[in-house]
Image (cartoon, rainbow, N blue to C red):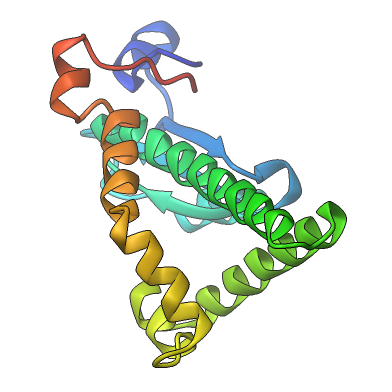
Length: 180
């Protein structure tokens, strides 16, 4: 039930089995999303394998404490939307450089998918993978330099903080509402 804590749900349903809250985000309907789940505090310290297995039908499962559930959902939303915005910018740049829109869209989408596949199997961080594909003096490192000149990484950090209601200006304005 969106907006209700597990404590409130427990009060509504009375005694019974352990309750869990789960929030599905970004691609869950296709089986490739992120599901954030939390156990009822004081009743369970983790989420049973059977619950995780059931939720994995919709994608990757991450277990968090209930007080982090809204923030985790905001982070997933900010990440998904930031990637989509970056992809749109790359498509526009490719069109401006002379590619047709359909070719630009196809190249950017497939590259994003391929990168996600590589990252899923990569034991290191995204920065490690970036370092492996960006050859010294190459086109990739030149493009990355343009992003760093504009402090894009810092903008992504700010976007996540704002979405999660953790940026000072957002907190002062009362934070954000996260729909679940």
